[in-house]
Image (cartoon, rainbow over all chains, first blue to last red; front, side):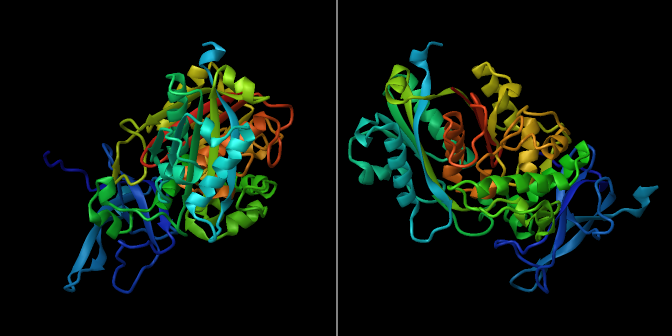
Length: 94
Length: 384
């Protein structure tokens, strides 16, 4: 296996909202579970599943998005663990 | 193929689906088996080959302790949502191979409340996938449905039409769990689970058991006034590029489902066209799944579903009656029993003795379809 660089921006291919708190082993962020968006982002050669840091009013199939990170949870020693996500890409709208 | 080599359903039995803390999975299984044997007019001692399945509620072959220590070969099957179909396939093949002339296929389960508990390691995924909140079956069904509605221009109301028909059918069925009819608006207004799917568009893990007695060739006609012929049964796993649950990535598509492969094989072997089907059972883990499966199995074209549903074509009096017993939406999904429930309903419909609403006009061609994680499907054609 070898590394393969993927583009950091793409378009929302499908989306949904996680509207209820998942069972463990899900680890909620500091402050507890809040509903979050999940979807597939079309990066051209592959669709990648990720959290979507996009407000409900904006979210739609085809929305241009860009890679970002969001807090996932705090580890036992207090370290904040981040995970990858996608946010609206204003430049992608042009 | 001559009648001698054909396998027929000659008896069926079922423990009502739902939730009852007073019975175990094994209790329900025993009752379903005894009903199926009585329905066929045979005894456990007559059974020459058996297969059983349960996802979480016990080892099926230990039922011999309750049914009788006859020494019968008893195969245990665990194939997720395709478990029931796998038991039928196992028994049918054994009968054709000359192992016996009379066999039994059965399945049961009793699940905890709420979404199925999943383990990332069991699916070959890292812990991060579940820890960051992406390992939920409900998300998968919502994502697949969302994309499908978008691609084919189908409205969210169609999802409510599916569920409303399921609960309407369930309300007339003595073995169903959910017997209260709900309006489309009530379904649309119920709690959001994962848009576009609401609470009443999802089935719940439940409990239940079902069993079939199968007979080979002439034996079937000695035992049963109207044996139902297993014209075909095809089981398929996914191929590269299918869109399945718990996929951190997908190829860009097109995404071909194992349901397409299984349905095509089932129709081809049976020599029957999808248009010939007069009563169908489709996997309806959620409203979106049934909608998609209608087209994947070939019962209609992609994008035709909304009109089909709105016209009542999938109602018991319609052109292609679907899930006449309310399906998983009204019955819940005890994984091991669910596929056999489908057979139970179609067999009873074809014998003109449906427990719930009978499809009028003496239907002669039935179809069953199951689909499950991660990318398995089984389809059958049943005829009289």
